Image (cartoon, rainbow, N blue to C red):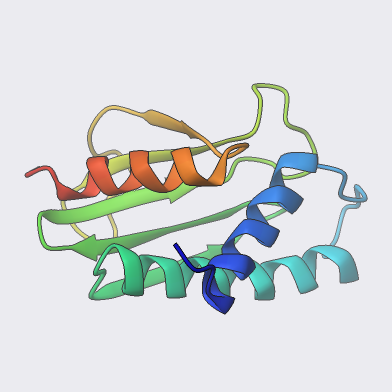
Length: 131
């Protein structure tokens, strides 16, 4: 399978997320501001092109990124957790949601991000099941 520009961008942001070596601060750092922008572009493109997401909403928190996206089966919520510390390993929290403002949703599912191909397979499996 040929590697596309968007696939390389996703791999890059997920590997950066795996390292978790962001400077800590009480405010927005230039490093996290750049990462937020890169992650947003790469993850939004991945969700739309590979998972068929029709709506994607991203939020930048204090050293975390979260949001909602909608695929054919329904809505999902995701959260990177604190990007400065990967205490529970490199993973992305994903769960079903009722709508784009549902922060409670279904059970938490943690998808490891240290193997991009496995991550993509698990995301595809999760987001093609009926909610």
